[in-house]
Length: 267
Length: 267
Image (cartoon, rainbow over all chains, first blue to last red; front, side):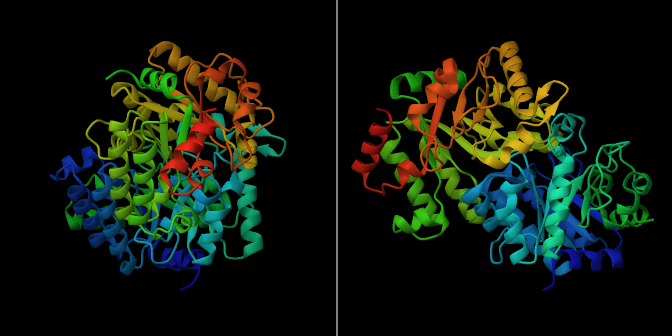
C-alpha cells in the first residue's frame, strides 16, 4: 500500500479528476426501475461500480441512502465498498461524521481501519465540534494510509452562517483550512483533504497554501460547472476532485450511456 | 401518540431528568467481560435497557459504537431500539447527522420515520451546514411526533472555535438557539431540542428564551456535575435532561448496582 494522497494522485493522473457520487435516492431508484429497498440501492450502486469502476478516479457512496434501509442497507453498503476496491478507483464514503474522544475513535474503527467491513479509502468528516475533535480519525487515517475530507465550505447557501463566522484567528472555514494545511505539512502524508462546494461565485476563503486533496461537490444538479473550477480554485485546481452524482446517474442504467456521460465530463 | 416534547415531559416528571448514555466502547465491554463484537455491544446495551428501562426517562445509544461492527452492529442497534420502546423511556439516538436536501431526507427516513427499523424518539443533529440545512429532518420529526437535538454548545474545549465564532447576527451557537426557539414558537410542537454540554463554567450563550428540551452530556466522566446544573442553566434547568454514560455503566453489569447508581444520581 501507499498513502491515500499518492494513490489518489496516480489514479487521477491516469483517469482524470472525476468522482462519481453514488446517491441511490428514491427518485433515482424509481427512474431506474428498481425497488425502494436495500436490494434496489445495492443493485444500482454495484451496477455503477461495475460499469464505471475502471473509468473514474473515485466513487463517493452516500451513507444516508444505505442507512435509510437499516442493517440491510448497511450490509449492501459493505458489498458496494468491497466491489470498489479491485477497480482501482478510490472509495470516499460520504458520512459527515463528527464527535469527540472515544466516540470519534469508534467512527475511525468503523470507516478507517483495516479489517472493518465498512473501511473506505477516505471518509468525510464534519467539524462543528472543532478541528481538534477530529484528530482521532485523522490519526487513524494516517496509520492505515487512508484519508479524510473535512467539511470546510459547503455547497449550500445555509452553510455561510457557520462557515464564514469569525473568531480571533479569522473565519471558521479559514481556521479549518489552516489547521488542515499545518497538519499535512507536519505529517507529510497529506491524509487531510477538504470539502469545498463548487457552487459559489467566490469562496470566501484562501486555499492557496493548502496542500491536500479538495473534494468539490455541487457540480451539475446543484449548479456548479466543471469549466468554472479553474477560475474558482486558481492554482489549487490541480488538487480538485470534482464530484458529479445525479449528472451521471440520471442518464439511466444503460452501460454505454453511463460511460459516454463520464467521457463527456472528462472532456 | 403525542408529541415527543410531551412524552418526554411526562416521563421526566415521573422518573426524573436522567438520560443514560449507552456507549458500549471497547474498554467497557472488556470491563463487563463481554467480547468486542456486535454481540458484545448488544448484550451490554440490552442488559442496561432491561435493568433500567422503567427507572430512567431516556436512553441515549451512541450510534458509533454499533457502526464500528458494520451491518451486524446496526442489526444489534435495531434490537436495542426495539427494546427501549416498551419501557416507556425515550430513545434518543446519538448520531450527529447533518447534510443537505435529499441526503438529509434520507437520514430522516432512517431515524425519524415510522416503520424504519432505526427510528428513534429523537436523534442528534450537527449544524455545520447551517440550521436551515436540517429542516428536512426537523419537519419529518414533527410529522411523526418525534424530536431532534441540534448540537449548540458542545462539552469539548475544541468546540469553541466554531460555536463561539461571530456573524452579523451574533455567535454561531446563539444563532442556532434563536432559530430553534423561533421554530418551536411557530410550530408549537417543540420538536427541536438542543445539545448543550454540562462541562462549562459559563456557557457563552443565552438560553433564557429557549422553549424546548436541552440535552446535557458531559456529566460525570467529562467533569460536569449534576449539582452545578441549576447554576449553569438558570431557569432553563427545568428543560434539562442530563446524560450520564460511563458514570452509570462503569459500575458493571450487576443489576442492583446499576439501579442503585441511578437512584443516587436522581438524588
